[in-house]
Structure formats: C-alpha cells, structure tokens
Image 1 (cartoon, one colour):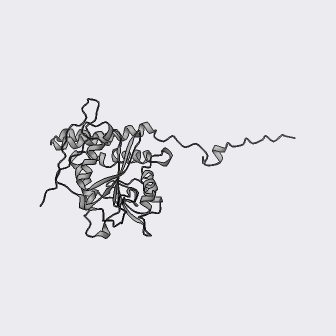
Image 2: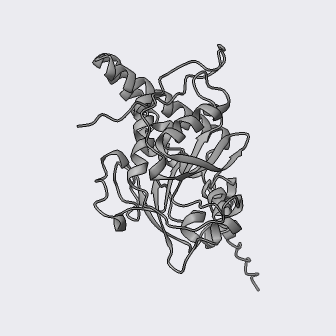
Image 3: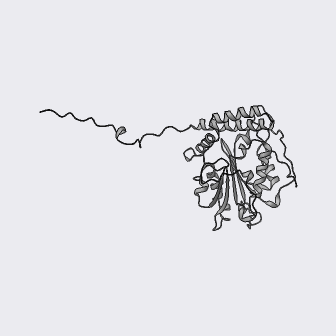
Length: 296
C-alpha cells in the first residue's frame, strides 16, 4: 500500500497576516531632533533671504526644505518627539501645575477654555484631562480635529466669551523665524486672555491667582545658551506685557514656564532690542525683540 506523503505544513507567515510581527523601527530620537533642528535652520535661512530680497537663495533653500520632506516630515518628527512612549508630551507639565492646590481652588464647575497654538495631537495630557475645553490650531495641520489657522492671523476676540483662560505656546515661539515676530506673538497672546476674577488673602503666595495664564515651552538653549536672552531678560520682557512668572521648570532639553497675565500691569512702553547679555562664540543667536505698540 502506498504511503501517503505527509503534506508540509505551511508556515504561520503564509497562513495568517503578520499581526505579531515586530513593527519597523520608527525614527530614532536623534534623527527626530536632527530633522526638527535642520528644518528650523532652513526656515530661518529662507526668511532671512526673503528679507534681503534674495530670491535666488530663497528658492534654493525652499527646494532644500522640500527635499527633506517639507512641513509634512517636520510635523511627523514633531509628533514623534511628543509621543507618549518618549515622554515628550510637554502638556504633562502644564497639567501637573494646574492640578496644584493653588490652581485647583480657582477651578469651578465649568471647564477652563484653552487655546493650544501649534497643536499636533488631540491625545495629549491637556486634551485628556477633562479640565479643559481645548481649541487647537495649527497653520499646516492635516488633522480634521485641529483648526488650520495661523495664530497671528486669527481674528481678535470681540467679547470675553471668545477669550481663553489658558494659552499654550509649546515649541512654537522658537519656530517664528525672526526676533520681532516673536515679540509680536507674545504681545498678541494678551488679547486672547480674559480677566479672571479671584479673591486672594493678602500675603498668601499659595492663593495667588494663576489664571489667566500662558504656558510657554522653549528649547533649553534658547534661555541657557543664548547671547541675547536669559531667564531674567525673558522675565523682564514678559513683565512689560503684563505677565508674572508663576511656575518654571528646566530640563536637559526644554524650559517650561507658566505666566499669569494681569491686564492692569501692562503693556508698558519699555523697549527690548537685540542686546548681547552673554558673549561667547559658542552661544546661539536666539532673541526676542519687543517694541512699544504703535498707536494707530
């Protein structure tokens, strides 16, 4: 009797979709930072060329930006940089501060209104907290949950109902290509913050109001290794606008700060030009220029 030859079993890979296969490695942390840094430098070079009316250089830089993936690649790298598995969600720091006793005592039944400028995701800590009603905007967003809008072109609020209790500029200000533009962006935040009426006991620092407030996140070298800016000068610039520093944190890569706004305290007519405060060839050129607002 003929022996029936056993049929060779198919491998698991042939019989099922590869659901258990290890996913391809994502962009490394180093590659992510390199891409983001390169994109910032190219955008700065592009803006400088346009300012000089050097169309040839501007076009060459634009092509270089497109060659490395353009804004889409930059956004993907930024999202990876803020992914939870890399601990990059900067809004975790904000929510830690807003959960403090001095902040909690001012939280009512209604959720606070927050404007997140340069939003990358609707799944970060501030969006999942349940404490905030978040409006997300980003000029180049492809996410339907994020309004495609430039903060500097957003219509000014016509009433208090259109203003916010919290504004987030997380790794946004450093993306503005020139120092004057950064100062104007900081000034513009004031128009979007509403007055927050709270009663505090005199001399009780823990009971001081933290709202309305601006959450500002910058790469640490913008503060720690700049020729033209440090923590003291930033505080002076913010004070001229009516802001007071409430919270701050410095990590190896980022500087976080929470600024309480008082409309009665600003703006002043003080001028902050690009002045060297820390000389050194190894320092960067990051700066913020703030000039008195022109009265029309």
